[in-house]
Length: 78
Image 1: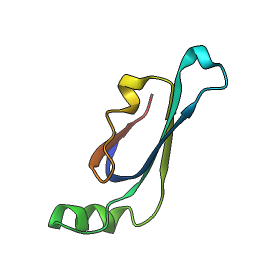
Image 2: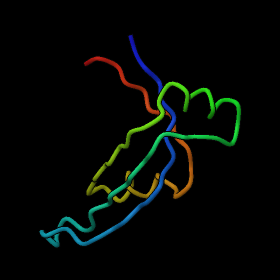
Image 3: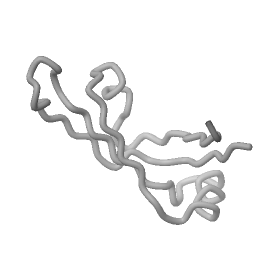
Image 4: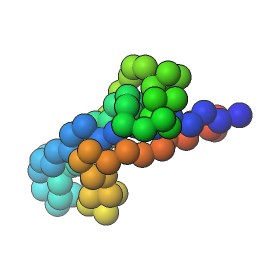
C-alpha cells in the first residue's frame, strides 16, 4: 500500500557545506497544499498539517525544487 500527498515548496536555501570540497548544502522545506484547485482542496482535507524538510549536497537534486511549486510525494513501505 502507498499514500500520495501533495506538498508545496515554501523555502529553499543554500549554504556552504562544512567540508568545502563537498560544495553547498541545499535545504528544501515543503508544506501540504491548501487551496487553489479542487485537487488541492481534496489533498488538504486528507493532510491538513505537516511539513517535510530535505537536505542534500547534490546540486542536481537541490535545484530541482522550485519555490512555490507543488510536488506529489509518494510514501511506500520499504
